[in-house]
Every structure is written in C-alpha cells, then in structure tokens.
Image 1 (tube, rainbow, N blue to C red):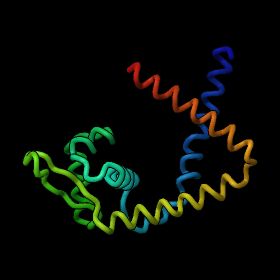
Image 2 (cartoon, helix red, strand yellow):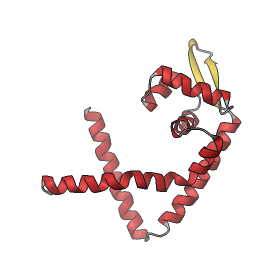
Image 3 (cartoon, rainbow, N blue to C red):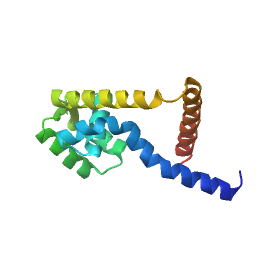
Length: 151
C-alpha cells in the first residue's frame, strides 16, 4: 500500500475509533452517569479491581497521571464510598487503594451491561466475520505492543 493510500486508511480508521469505543463500551455508561463519576475515575476503579489494592504510585503510572492528580481522583472516590485507602503493613510509606462494596457493585453492573450490549452488537456479525475481526485485533495488539517496547 503506497503512503497516500495508507494515509487515507489511517484517517478512516481514526474516524471510526471513537465511535466504536463509545458504541462497544456504551452499555455501561448509564451506571457511570448514575454514579456521577467520570470515565477516568471508572477506569481507575477497574484497575483497582484487577490489581487488588494497588499502590497509589502504580495507579498514577498506569493511568499516566501525576501522583497529585491521582490523589485528587482517589479523594473523590473515597468521599463517595467507592474505595478506601489502606496502609501497607510491610512499608508504612506505601498507600494502597482498595475497592469498597459500592465500587465493586458499580463495576459489576457496568460490566454486565457492557457485555450484554457487546453481545447484541456482535450477534449481528457472522461467526466467520467475528473470527476474522478477532484475528485482526490480535495482530493490531501485537503491533502496538512491539511499538511500545521499541519506545
């Protein structure tokens, strides 16, 4: 593919990405809106759930924000009862962030709605098309990881 055609392809992909992300993840947005938290806060909740009480510094690195910004975000989530801060018994300098039941329930509801929405959307594709799409996404993921490793 020559560079001008590749450029057109990239522009078309870029045009679809935001719409696809919103469409595929949109099933859980109602819960997020009802809980009155931001998308970055919800992403932080998901990271906290997956990493089981991560350190504040790990959270800020994963989200690509400063520790100060992470602190403000966690302050709001603590105030609303989604998470709690805990000291690390092995190192008093370390602060860990753990989900409260309210945070677990929000993630569960949002993810259930997202899965239902995605299932409805992908049910409109043939099994062959879904298989092809998955293969392409896996290749894209590999290419992105290789780029990230190169720096």
